[in-house]
Amino acid sequence: MGTTILLGLVSIGILIFVHELGHFLAARAAGIQVEVFSIGWGKGIVSFKWKETKIQIGWIPFGGYCKMAGDSPRDTLKGGSGEYYSSPPQRRIIVALSGPLFNYLFAALLFIMIIMVGYEINTFPSRIILADGDGVTLAGGTTPAKAAGLQDGDVIIEIDGERIRNWNDVTENIVRNALKPIQITVQRAGVRVTVTAIPALDKETGRGLIGIHPWVKPVIGEILPGEAAERAGLKRGDLILSIDGRNIRHHVDFYDALEGKAWQEVELVVERGGGIERVVLIPEKVDEYDSAGLVFQQIVYRSERYILPVAVGKGVVQSAEAVRDTVRGILFVFSGKIRARSAVAGPAKLIYLSGVIAREGFNYFLRVMSYISIAFFIMNLIPFPALDGSHIVIALWELITRKRPNLNIIYRIQTFGFIVLIVALIFITMNDIRSFF
Image (tube, rainbow, N blue to C red; front, side, top):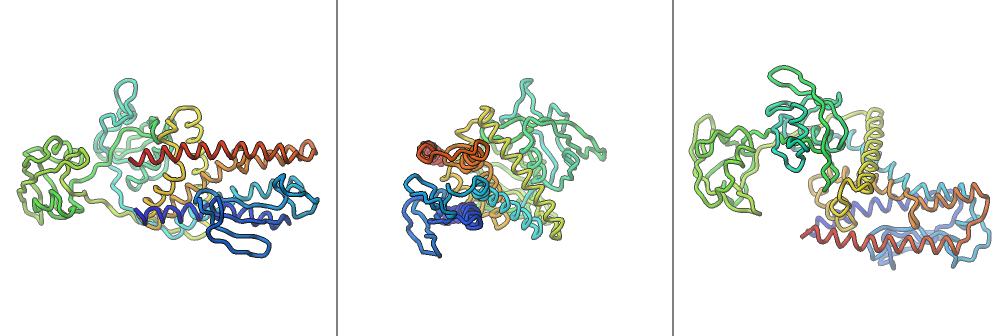
């Protein structure tokens, strides 16, 4: 748990640093004095002075800020070029925009790095099994996959013209297209068949779902120490042929055959080393599931590596797609199509989930940071008081009307916005903590 939280804090801290660095560099380039550069809020637990700027890490590990000269009514404006509100509105727009922009550029850079270096993932082939509902049943009692005409055993080879290499490609192209028609091309009995499916919207997560599972061959990939499979004498590489005489074609058949058999003897017929073995297994009840204590074998997919010019092009496309998907998700939340309580993650959940995903490997660490960085980019551009978007709107208003803003009014509005954000943050964090249990 400690490692998970530490990794999460590191990933979120990096993104906050990148965001505030954008403001800091833009302010210095505009000749505006930055008095404090803080990662985290509150009093600095670690700080040092660099030129005229105090650099610190705040004791509240959420957010950060750049305190600039002349950005508060408490500051006495002398009309100097180093003061924020004494600077031309064009410069203030650039300073406010630079934080979110750095988050976007950082996300694009991470995508480019992943594409250049390549990555390795454990996944499954793109052969499918039709699911029985799983929360995506349509009005007619069917699923989008069944309504589209997909069948058990179909191998998905293309979605919207994009080549599909494994199950990860399948899910990536479905989850981001909720409520949008997609063209799915499958290989069926040696024939290419193309169908149109409209992924249903999962109201808990905002993902698109059509009601399919990967067809996982029942070959044991891992035996969990001290659990049922180990006691039964099962081994890695065993191919499970049947359970109590029931033919097992894939993992769904396997778990269906075990359902309701906890603490009962079941006979497995397995293929091992070219021969046939009979094994008696006693499944256990684990987290309300009848568990055999094994994990089925996955395939290892290694992505292609691309030279820099190609990687840049693909990275820019991926970052643009991430922006599109994030905006769409936010619109789903505000329109009530997905439940905000389950779909919205606060700082606690972001830190925890970032750490969990980061532990899966460096590729996952970079990927989660890139998507959260995109979220930082979008959320900070919203013109709500205390966010960067509000500073941009104030500067635009001054540019249009040519009237100097009243700092006291601005300060009250920004303070109100900040309080609202803090209250929202408290409720979201409480919801995060409740979700952990």
